[in-house]
Length: 134
Image (cartoon, rainbow, N blue to C red; front, side):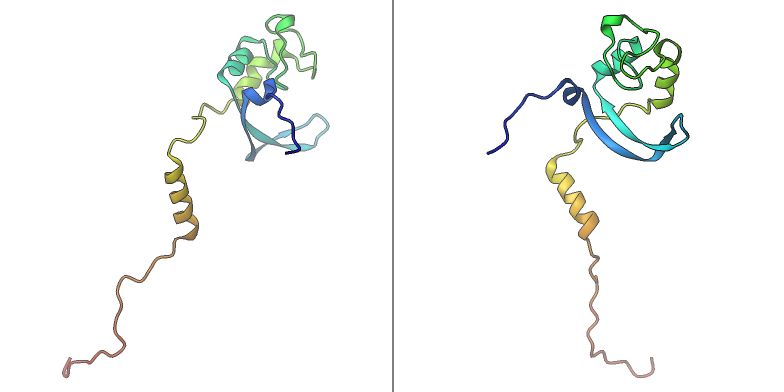
């Protein structure tokens, strides 16, 4: 075993999931189009963003500056002016974290979705005698 275990960082503890978003993108100030990702964060971080103690743009903790500082010290985002609008734009909604069904149910569903082949329900013998006059 070559790896040394290190405790998870604050980011790793509070960013529950990070997935690419197939249909959301954002135009950068220089005109380029950047694909966005779906970020699932902990309730604690979401509450801090709503209360103005965490930047909605880069997730930097700004507690030491007080709620809704003029600008984020890390990325320069104008928190006082744009935090509420940024939350409205980016917040997609809540969704349950973790599997809602058991491992067996998920595996069974995956196998049936990817490997299911319908089988013939009725087999007709090759040698069928036709009735005369039919």
